[in-house]
Amino acid sequence: MRFMKGTEVEVMDKRELPFESWKPAKIVKGNGHTYIIKYDNCAREGSLIANKVPRKMLRPRPPPMEQKSHNIGDIVEVFENYCWRLAEILGALSRNIVVVRLLGSSKEINVPLF
Image 1: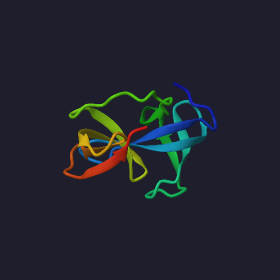
Image 2: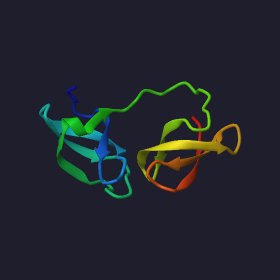
Image 3: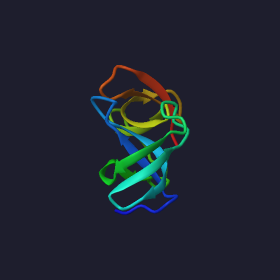
């Protein structure tokens, strides 16, 4: 998939072991194989511009989803520390807030459902 200047994307970060995370960014320019991107308010990168991010490390931002019911044990992506990470739902605190455990970690966080 080719991305155009200004396209909002997510960039894979493999430093978050054992599972990667996805950071929101915008395409500054590219040639179809590599792209220069600017991260969106990422605490680690700030407004850093990263050169030569390969196309295989990018994905388009997903469209907004309709809210659906989630069950304990479901695997979801949560936005934590300016990154999208995989997590498992452990339980619900309220109708709109669930407790999740980040995969590959013992860290538990409370996240709102959208």
